[in-house]
Length: 337
Image (cartoon, rainbow, N blue to C red; front, side, top):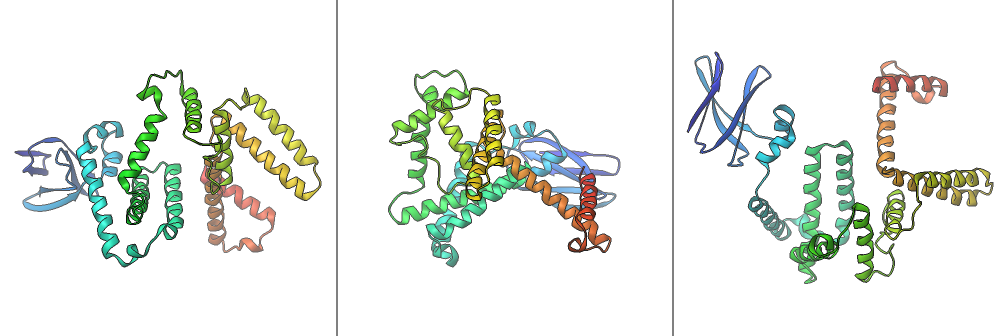
């Protein structure tokens, strides 16, 4: 098959493809680049670019994020470029083979155990969280891969201990999902998402959990833990009727916090304030952890702009008065907006 596309000065020939969906060209750095999407799922392809009288052979990398940014809406391309089920299984099988090789041959990978990987896993999950907050799909894909590697790594260690392997992990998950979705795999009927959540918590108790809160990890960050506690007790109906009722509790806790003079007791009251604010946010449909993290990022960005402004003016923040720094802070805010 031979397909050509171009203008008066440039054209491209693309050969040796049985099926071609489309060719799109666009200018970049004075040259014309041609992006081709086809059923072969290849990461690169050979093109012949003719400019004037000379032929140049280019091997162009087809990166998906380039497609998304330059060519068409993501939804349209998803239908064309997503892998088939067979390709997904093949990729996962290859990952398992690579894990086997690394565990056998790589000195670092051979040395790792459950405990040595733990803090690295937390780091990878937080990096994934950052990418999600930024809604950076390219980084999300990358960080998901890092987290997946850790999951496969733990399963490999489990198999070496004759405790479990990756199939056991997945089969256990499958069984749990089927059991906890009787409205899909059984005869139970539900009205909405809230009823699904309530059934979920009740089914967990049937699995042997002695408390609705037994699934809340002790190592979960405090804000996330408070949010999860409130979600779980809501699953059995222990919740404020309205957001306004929840806000009245915030007012009550704020007054108690303000009135308390004993420092130790005041800290306890502060905990009550934070718990009630988190609860109010949850009822409104907000995620307080995400909200606070976005504020952290906003503060860091503005403060670094303030530092840059000070540096450009040969000023030292540590030698400036609070009033002077406030003026610089307001300027940094305007730049950010």
